[in-house]
Length: 94
Image 1 (tube, rainbow, N blue to C red):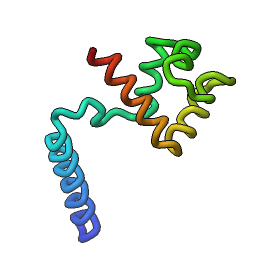
Image 2: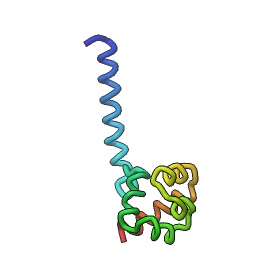
Image 3: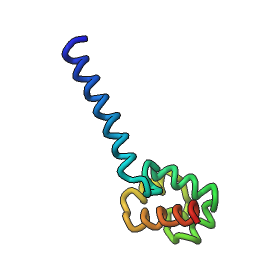
């Protein structure tokens, strides 16, 4: 294995170690490792667009909703993302 191959394997090992320690750092965080897309898909499975729009009054849920447009909005708007995360926690862990 040449110098470049060795460096690459060292970087990969460091990444794996970092992932393991990060997972151990947040054992009580129910959102750790969850993507916003998976949160939204779970809530859609439970509520559907119409009821989700009633639970959280956000335009992207009420007018021509799509996962793509909602993700774009939620990634830019912290207060809306917090509401979605809170609803997920309340629904998933009652």
